[in-house]
Length: 208
Image (cartoon, rainbow, N blue to C red; front, side):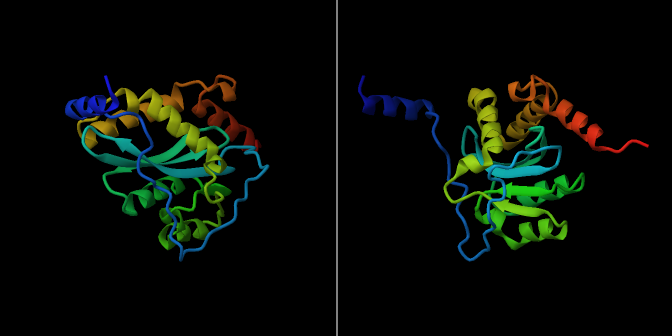
């Protein structure tokens, strides 16, 4: 069977191969870019370094977009949000929810237009967070979030077809709950992100 016939059959059955989705990291050229602060820096305790990123979620028809904030020390997903558009409010909602809990020391992102916007940066500057941005074209600078996306997609998204945004949100919520509280990580000595986060937090709280 030739390639054209396979392509025609896949189109008729609504089957699509696994491939990169929309480019979500286009920068706004007029906005300020901050230097990358994390070269040779290791997260030493919870909330030392957070990373934020946006990815796409494939639906049966169309796309949704997912933003998440991850603590680099524990790999704990601090906050996340999904939306059917790439408008700014869903990113700010995710950021505000995270900052209601605690303020990190360093916050890393790529140079995408969401993360160079004044509405986003003003929130971090108000909290006196050190702002770090990946080098252009260097996804590896935000490697922990990239690994999170890989795990989410290969363990959940690519194995299911979401018929509606609500179904996608519910399944992603369940997976993040599993990821944070049940899924052991080899890099964390087979502990969960929640276990590492709580243990690290206790160790940093001074005792009387």
